[in-house]
Length: 401
Ligand SMILES: Cc1ncc(COP(=O)(O)O)c(C=O)c1O
Image (cartoon, rainbow, N blue to C red):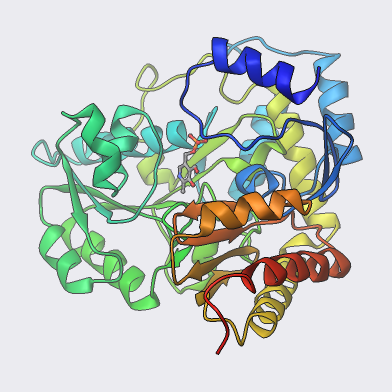
């Protein structure tokens, strides 16, 4: 099918919830994609920070092929080896914890919020129900994770939402001090707000969150759905800071493109869940778990955590240099290979369209910020090419000083 045919079907038969770009992809390899016309693209979005080991990595492809040809699904009424081994692997990466596998980031966060409530009850705190989150955050699209998302304009069409969330400005320790009280079950934060425009929490803010949680008996949840598994140049973004959570959530990169999320909690927190408290039919199935094990193997064997740190610095530095005379750019910020170019106007949508025409995939994470999140296997040449395209487009905006 060509793009027009696919688009006609989608327009008629798929719910109109996505503002899609006028491109249909048919193939991917490494950091490259091809569309229905055979046009090649450099993928600096990686399916929104998912394809960290690149498209069609042979080890991930083989793991999926082998597992799906052996055992695809039996439900969580039974044990399967890939799930048990992946749980151990995530425990070992963190150095602590027990895991619940979900199918998505939102579901991993649902699990974290239910677990925090259950942990409070297990400690006899019947009155704890509140959750404190940051403005600008993104935690998912289910009713509860939408409520947890600190973006009021996303709430409005669906009100009323669960009402037990308190929103505080990111990096405002005083506001956090006021918001976290004895009724607070959990504080849930992104170490770097991805969908919010790649905004970094300060060390002081995270340290304050840890302290208030300890003082007031709340669980500290870090949502590392976007930042986890090497993207920021550490296995977990919180490892850039001297602060560790009680619960961490993962998804995106974990399955190498297959849907899997994980909620990992310290043993004493995890043990608050009893059989029947939480469940999923598909979560942690043998195929996504086998894919995830292959993804973790590739990240380790190809040194991709260190590569993300190095490539991220390179990309930031080259972007800054190439746009240094531009009045279009307000700020370039990020951590590892999660980077935003903030603009002096709402041009991000236009710029993304122009980049696509030139064969570069990026996205307008906010109206005035373009996000770059390439696979961690991105090469020096690919970085140089992406910078050239972005800088070329930006030169058309804002005039030059
Ligand atoms: C930090 C964060 N949490 C949660 C989610 C929701 O994940 P999913 O779309 O897999 O439900 C996202 C998705 O962008 C995210 O970036």
